[in-house]
Length: 197
Image (cartoon, rainbow, N blue to C red; front, side, top):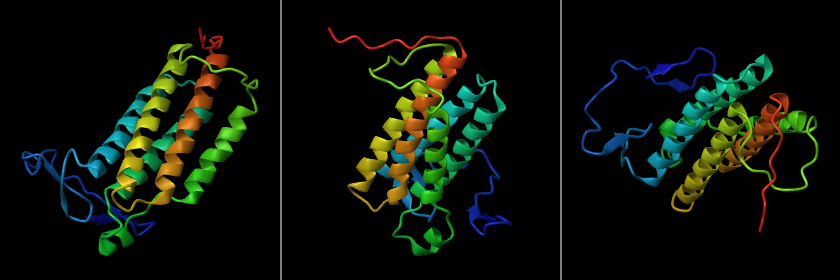
């Protein structure tokens, strides 16, 4: 492990792409403990990784610099969240050197939601996850964020988890919903309201 020069938190130094240590279905957590790859903890940070990867795809469709920078910040914060989830609270030595998602990241997301939501007309009905390609991809990312959130909730019912982790993903999914509406509006796509027959 290497230490960052600015925060003192541990960073993983990648020296080999394959290690063969996971060939029997287990992986190492940040504290060195071994866990099954289908365990609730590994599944939780795996879902966060999927969300992060999807946001990378979304960013290839974003034209504006402001939203690009925002999504890049969210991607970086998701790496923090992944490290947070990969480090059980019961491991004091590792836990002390891992930066965890905090209220500051939650508040940043809330500020961005408020900023972009005030540019949109008020919603009076449910909308379909549709629109242009960028808007639709942001809706998919929102759904993946919700799935990741559910996995973390499941983990938290069995093990101690940072309370801010669930809150953060809850806000991220709200942000992605708002950004999907922004993308559709700026792309000239009309919102399609859900029909309940």
